[in-house]
Image 1 (cartoon, rainbow, N blue to C red):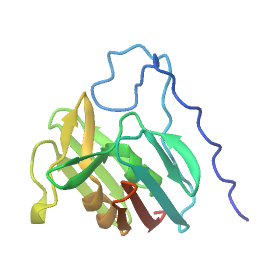
Image 2: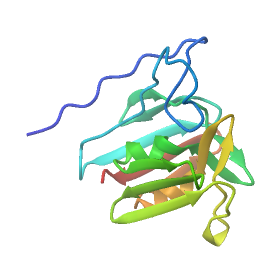
Image 3: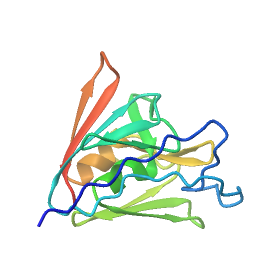
Image 4: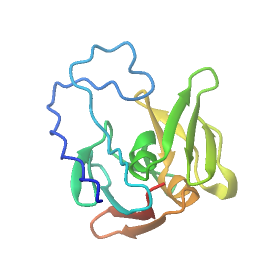
Length: 162
């Protein structure tokens, strides 16, 4: 039996307030911005993100992140939940230690803010109250492959949902 794909999410409006991530607990909830969540364990997922755009796709379905990916020190930085949850991993935030945790595909990652990752893979950071992580590090640790199209500023992540 095949599980139906999720329905596309509505596009946020300019005055929408988001409450999906770190630092948003004190904001009124006018619009909770959904992220791509999958229950398709073992299925192939293709995630496409464009630098500077909040819209992204998972298996050709459009979703909207609460912030756009950007480049920092040669690394593509994405909102914490975007890639991890699109690949089926669980994400959590430990406020006391300012650490993001990602669990999936037999891997448990602890990503403390402002602490460089191994092998010069970038540094998790907070921008505008949102937690950003190096895309390649997270995707590759979850067993996905990452591709880059410089002409269109598009990142493609291909992996099996965990």
